[in-house]
Length: 403
Image 1 (cartoon, helix red, strand yellow):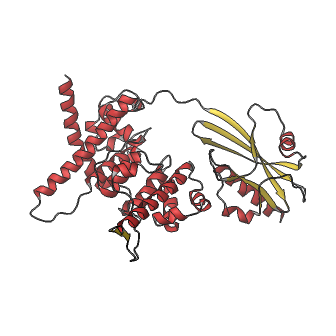
Image 2 (cartoon, helix red, strand yellow):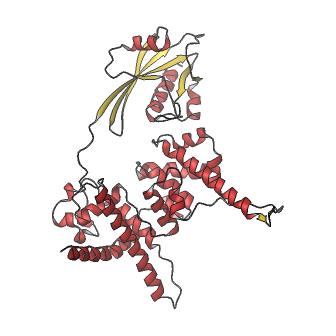
Image 3 (cartoon, rainbow, N blue to C red):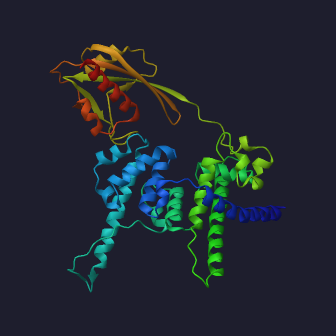
């Protein structure tokens, strides 16, 4: 029985590969990072695409590649620059790890370059240029800060056409539906099963390409990026057709191979278990003005949104303090002309956050405030958190309305 099931799965995997490759070749979106095989450019796109939609990433990627076109340029960039280029994408640990990885690559390449200049125990006096190249092996890529198994597999398959598997949310959804996997993909055994399917698919794509090239060895053949296309086809299918809600099964290229489609269980899979309960959080922010400038502070290292800028704010969950009382408690002076400015509601993972902002005037010579005083025209020089960037716009509008 088990042997029969294994043969059925093997047959299905074999049939899926050409269908996925042909579908991707005809339907792939025209995305800027698909026009290059530069591993650095592909790496940046993959990091940006984590937890972020393609349409959001595109202008960020293009701006990043214009400002920081090489690994060396990222390694040398100031923290303010990389955070400003990332401003609005969220999950800022990603960009800090990207820079750490770039610095690690530069250091490794320099060390190797220096070692290559040593002959018979002596260093050559001939000037040499160090080439800062992105590593090519899966193990080396995986060892870089901020890169996990999925990202390493994506980079190696897309940039170098290596048969390295990938498994993200889109691919999990596609594979659980095709194979009718009922158990939670977060469970260890199920997760490993999905990785095995992903690995078999990309390996078969590689074998199909090698077989075709060998058959046509008597005449030159154009390289088929089968591993790259296979992995991207799974991601693309999950993004465009096999979506979480209202999937377009009627135009799906693999519907005749899909267990969930045949058994009308599309809505049931993948089985992700119970959702984490939503938690409400409430903050009050003070947009403090003095002499036409506004007080901002930089978030410290080691916390969410580290190194980004914001207006002074305080979490008040369960507190019955009035804004005037909170202001006095935090700044040790009474607020003058404290007025409601704007309320921002947003979500971060399982948190539903309400940020209630108040505009306050500070005494001209007051020294009780820690932070940096900025004109509204200077706001764009710093990277703000998304919610506080909105407050910065309202602060600037306050100035304009009075002028």
